[in-house]
Length: 195
Image (cartoon, rainbow, N blue to C red):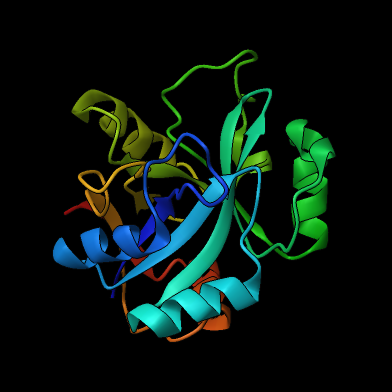
């Protein structure tokens, strides 16, 4: 099952031009079979994601792209944003306490402080395939992922329809709900790819 793990909509990410239904239509048109909406520093309520999935007859999962002093972090398996998450150590503490997962997004981009030397001490892995990054940046991310506990993930980082589904993550089996989605992520039962 092919899932775009990094998507933004204008519902909670003002930098995005995508409505939720436009995101789903664009991803479906590229052959993607599900999306994970990862708004900036906000997470969709479960009921809203379920409603969109039902309306569009298309699986919709939830995550969040958290802004920290070392860059953006894709987080899965938590229910809320806390301003304290802007500090990597605090984000790590909160995510681990809730049983979530953390992936350094587009790791070749530089913001403020450099990420820690031991990425595996904080992150489950990295986003090895990002649709808005170039080939050299993604090749660097693939190399970083090889040293991580889990494989790298893929996502388009879509803010417009033409970006949706450019990169995604192929899971080894069909995923019908968020619990199965999180279990498959934890198991590392996937590969990242350019679509």
